[in-house]
Image 1 (cartoon, rainbow, N blue to C red):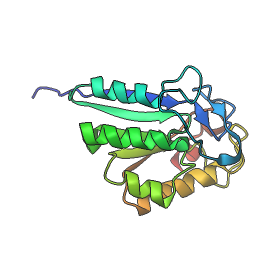
Image 2 (cartoon, one colour):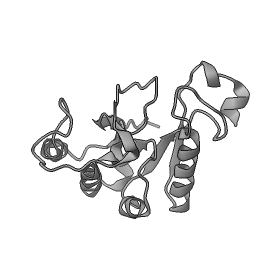
Image 3 (cartoon, rainbow, N blue to C red):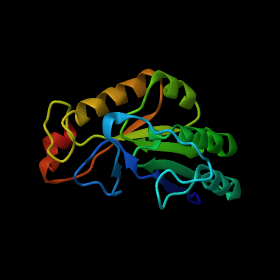
Length: 178
């Protein structure tokens, strides 16, 4: 039998994030007050050095129909409502099986869950500890928020995954098992 390979693209579409984790691998730009941002111009990037919405759409339009998967990630993908439009457009073009999300779960409202349902193959959330375990590298309520987001996704019948950042505080078989 011949092996079939599938190419995966992780597209970090924004560095904006409402969560200020001390070890962020994205060098995320902290946005206070857990508010989504408003974009006023699709031709201008929200953050210097990032692509504008129209530039992102142009990239999707240039992509072919090869067998690959895009995992939209970032900072927090859902901090900008226009990112949802981009995800839905990519899903319509490539099929929901080829679209995934990696996010902290901050903005998973019923409206956003309904919009994304059936449009992505899976959603992954990072969770390094159990909800009641204090983790000095993340904001105090992060494990609880991430766990609640996972429950919401499961309630809406999304395929979910949990990513864990390995660090000294959780590199223990029992912690990782739990």
